[in-house]
Image 1 (spheres, rainbow, N blue to C red):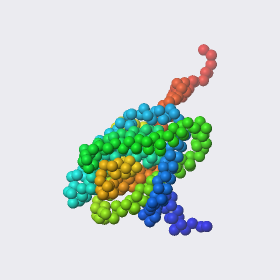
Image 2 (cartoon, rainbow, N blue to C red):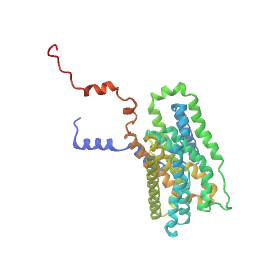
Image 3 (cartoon, one colour):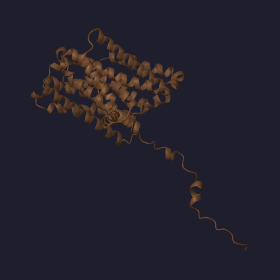
Image 4 (cartoon, helix red, strand yellow):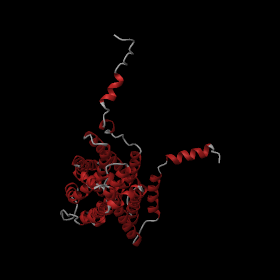
Length: 363
């Protein structure tokens, strides 16, 4: 079939379109039109847990034990990520209190502060790091450290900055430690245990890993927007205030990405570790935020309080997915290749010698 200017333009556009981003917005649209309710919501929740467990099983099967141990020891990466999550981010969130009360209102302002003190998300950080060809072992450890510390630090910071809770107590969501162990750590250790038998097979079927990465994120997007639709939080906010909240979420995400990238470059981290710092330092956990908000805030305020988190979480999924796809196509050359094996001295010096003149006779 001969190519016309119209079909050529369509093909060029199809090559430039990031179809994964289209799939993300498609998941949002499906959640808006057909949200999961009652039994369906429970089924989606379990399906998401299974997909995440499979994802971490495959990561455990692919990572060598030495790489996992190196990820645990990589404190030069973990410390700046934790500092950004629990120090720099809360300072950025405090800027919301500078706005007049009529702009956002008390509930949404508290929601922005609550968003700022949350830990990093685990599954999305690791999925984006994998897509961008970063240090997956370090991402697993860094995001897990952030989540475990968040169980303790997030309620403390929320009480200090917002005064959350009716009785001023500091609840510690110990059940989340069990969720981390069952949903993330156990599948990873199971993958490590069977690695010797299936690692070669997985190396020949990398498409399976990509499908798990992308599929788990799409499930998280659908589940998050389904919660928003079923609880009716989108109808309780005016369009103008919702647009302003979206701008604030975009500014927070942009500032976090910039700080994560600049701090990683100042520390002279390699390219794979910079990718890990970018996604572990700038993302926030919806899975941790929703149950914590239900404990820290009165029941009638929870929906409005987690609205900034819902917007930020959606924005980070779309932006970080596009960023990860872009980074996956811009790998830096390995700096060790030209320096690990210097050329032999004779080979390098021989061409520099002048040619020997031919002999013309006996002396």
